[in-house]
Length: 221
Image (tube, rainbow, N blue to C red; front, top):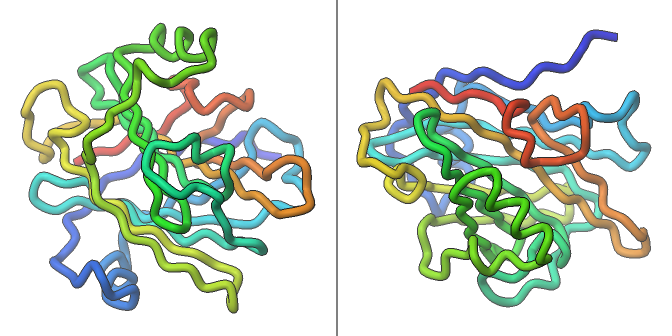
């Protein structure tokens, strides 16, 4: 069995599209590089693992992320922004760090479009959050990104479009073209009646820890 590797993506510019129209979004991302989520830390994926694919591009000053997540039981008990989404149901997680800075962002979206926004000053800030079991110091209360979701239980799938201004991630106002970011896309896939979610990531993590930045992928603009 070959050793999994994290993706190295050259992001294309995405043409303008109607962000409210799933068909238009799908067409706009056609041909964009795709990242597939897996469970690199396991010898074999779990029996209940369901696939997910994320396409990445950019336009003007925004990173654009479009995800298709196969899901047998699509739900979230979250009802307001900045809840602990990964404990409340299905969740897409986006980790982003421009290569020239220590600070990085963790953005989460649930199928009902509830959002969570976290920003860590550096890797040590994550350890502080873990020790105290509180993400308060990392929480960003004001909205920093936009998202839309579409839920289709009839085909056991949900979709998410996430539009992230570069200024919400970057410490300095550098233009996107020519820059390099580190990234990871992950998910929590819950099924009611099962004690634990199925967890997956685009990163080739050797341990189940989404914050292992050395194993994240690369975005090149």
